[in-house]
Image (cartoon, rainbow, N blue to C red; front, side, top):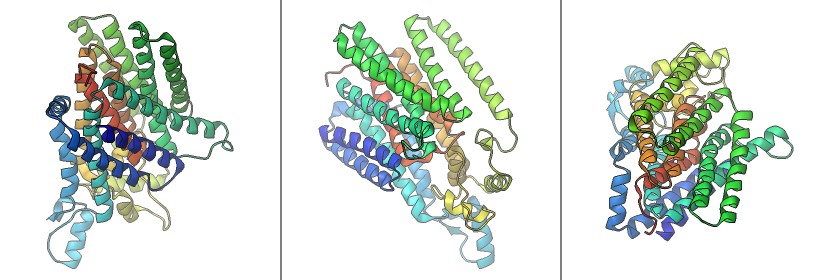
Length: 423
């Protein structure tokens, strides 16, 4: 598993660093590293590894496979009536078969398919690699460090643009949200080490690193990001605190259920208030207010979207039909809007189903875990943040953010069922 572990680290660091630097090869390098890690893990896996993977991914591995299958279906001939209305209109004008690929850009959809396969591969490889507690800790440190550096670039650029070049703000905001949860987990790790008679100095050093990372990420997400992104991060922090309170007070199942229900009701009220603050399509209510022409174009695009969408990854190609002025670019204001426009109701429903199932699985895994509960707790918080953030900004459309989230989910799932660090 050493080669798989090395390739896993390379995929995280290279993709994130290149994305922050604005390079265009980050997604390709991360995908190649994911493929290498999958091959290495498959060649070195034993029966015990496979059994562990089955236990960790029992929550919905078949739903995960449905995502690339849905994207692949857009590349094969299907009834054009299922697709974007532009294809049916073209068929009426030009004639010909009423079957064909329903994607607006085959190349972009193939890229999206490869990215989906890379993300699923990284998730599975992470589940296998981080069975060992030592490797799980190192992956946590790498993730917390990468996300903290991303948040730091946003902090420095907003404080003094001359000091740091502008990195993609949507991407750095998303990684800052992840980093806030992960660095809180690092602080919990340090506290558990101190309680179990590990080296006090080392525990203090780890705790201080986690504290610095938490402050850097908190400044980025609460000080220099939008209100809705800050609320998404606050939901994640509250989930970590909820799990910590239930575990520390050793609440009974009834009391824990009542507290969890109260938290869920409170979160629902807040989300309902946020969605009702503005009018229009529900997918556009958490995004920053766009100009009148841009908003109208996006509303027309959403109204035309069918069950299968216009092709995964092809938002920019379809947007050319709706943009009002030549030379302008109609960009997706949020990940949820892009997913809906690209893959339709099927893709958006699958995304939300996978997120909610993983969230529930990780929440109960954190409560049932005897030791190292901070792994699934922080992952559950990251998933909750990603779910809300997907309606507020486009950061999760970045390949590096997708790969990082896949590794984070794999880490939490693996450690939510692992009982030994000796393997």
